[in-house]
Length: 562
Image (tube, rainbow, N blue to C red; front, side, top):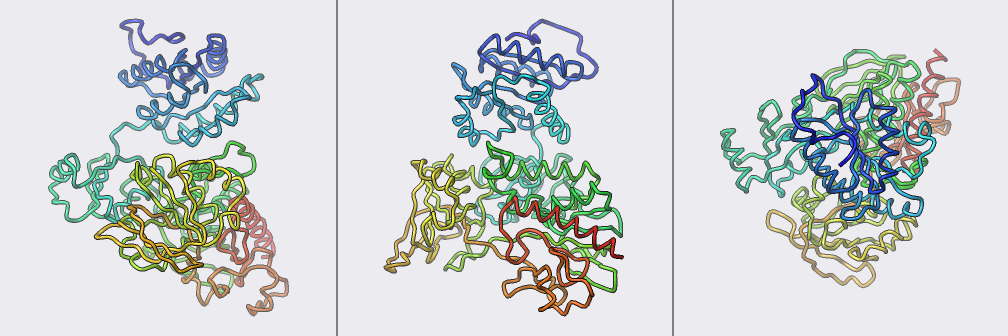
């Protein structure tokens, strides 16, 4: 290892240790150039450590860990002998899971690097050469450092979850923590370490899950709101009145919060579970404008959340809106804890939820081998298993690609062929994976198992033939539906529960104002809708972001009208 020396013998430790930016490249000239540029721009605030091989870099971060130092950013060359950049980053993640990760690639390696992005949760890949660094290097590192500082470097172990894979609430808690980017360790209640933790807490494990916080607070089968409060999430609005209340924290809601707050509106966003919505659960979004290498749903949600907070929008988690009252110009929302908040305008951006599969046995086994969506928390449990993905749209395809990284095999079961409802690029990716197979023209007839999923009965829609297949994991993506019952009698909806908006409302809602409704305005003046919950919406992330920002424009017009 060269550069900053970790083996120089006893030294007086500085009172405050600088966070480390570590770079590794097997080309000495490139290694020196990267370190030179980083040291010149960041040397006053960060310590720059460079290495010229993957093993050398691993030794360096082990030394850093032993010394109690923090690593903010890891920059690794893609092609290196002994250990590739991807392999190094995989190993480094175990020691510094919150360090931001950058891959250096030559132009010829770009496609290979993009394929490898799915192996690690890469934050950025950077093409060589990066001249001038003021345009191509420093803005990238600046953004990653800002993201790192927003979370810091938390010690491990952190929150502990003791549960069982076939306990539905255990799966829900793991998913809640993962989606809210709250780091935790998972322990099975039927294994030694989990049993020891239960004994230490004085519990018999009959009621699961058990959550032990970093402050040693023990929660038995906590609700989402109890969990959120214990782990430091904001669960209650700070004020009683706002310019705009955004209901829902998916792409549409986050965009509305960013634009509303940035334009001076007193803004609060209320999310029932975790910011990001269904898109936040996506392992890879590859057709979002401006991200040619793709990004995960969690990355998009995290960046949007930080952006909203930068403009002082309030983000409330684990709080559900249960009713909307209209009294003249006043709009009042009631939350699940009974709190009432008033506002001048509302943006409804609740998105949609997965449609339930109406097959024999599904309800009893949900959370015990039968899952809606492919959560990052459950996916590691699929190692070396034969899993089934039900559905033929993009969300099913993205899940299949994600699960195929660890599963022995992935079978996509769809009523029609994939080309009918899935993007071309995704179909091509799926067909390039040898451990993914397609079963078109097929539906799920029943699922069976004793306490957890064991067998899936599939039916050919053409012949009616039924066959059972052994499987312990099934992930369902058969469409989505809105959860808008709480708006019944207040806001006009279509027959499927989606919210109607725009000038056409005048003919169906009894609109009384002289002006026509604005494009995204619902049957209630000053109440707008954006994203997937709107009737006839595009059901795409980019469209949801556009509608969320557009809704704020119409809020301004509404408020200006008085």
